[in-house]
Length: 214
Image (cartoon, rainbow, N blue to C red; front, side, top):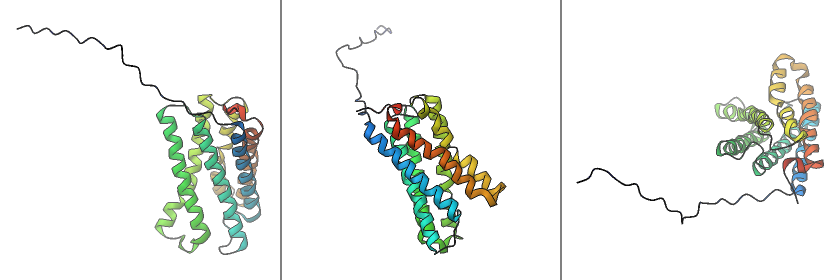
C-alpha cells in the first residue's frame, strides 16, 4: 500500500470564464448627465443664495428651495450612474460597490428632502433627524468619490481632477455653516457654481474625457 499520490492532470479543454464588458456610454448620454448636473447645481445655488438653507416652513420660499435641492440631488444620482457605467473610480468590486452605496445614501437624502418639504412639523423627532443625517453623509460620500476618481485616473484631463473640486462641497460648506453662519448660504452657493456647475459643463462639452464614445 503506497502512501504517495499522483496529482490529477490539469484539464486544458475547459475554456476560462469570460465576462462581457459593459457597453460604453454614448457621448450624447454623457452630455445629458452634464446638463442635469449643471441645471440642478445652478438651481440649488440660486435657491440657497436667495432663501438661505432653512427658509420659513410653509412659505413659497420653503417649497421653492426644497425643489431646487431635489433637482441638485437628482443630478447627483445621474452623475454617480455615469461614474459607475464608465468605471470612474475603478472596475473592482470595492470601487463599484462604493458607488452603489452612494446611490443608497443619495436615495435616503432625497427622502429627507421630501420630509423637509412636506413633514417639517416633525423636524424635532428622532426619525426625522436620523434621516436628515443622510444629506451630509451623501455629500461626504461624493467627496470621497472625487478623490478616488483623481487617483484611479480613468477619467482624463479636467474630468479627472474637477470632481475632486466639485465634490469637496461638504468639507467646505458644512464647516462654514458653523464658522460663518451669516455667510454660509453664499459660501455654499459659490462652491456649487465653481464646482458642480463647472463639472457639468466639462461633461457636457468634453464627454470623451470620461471614456464615452459614439
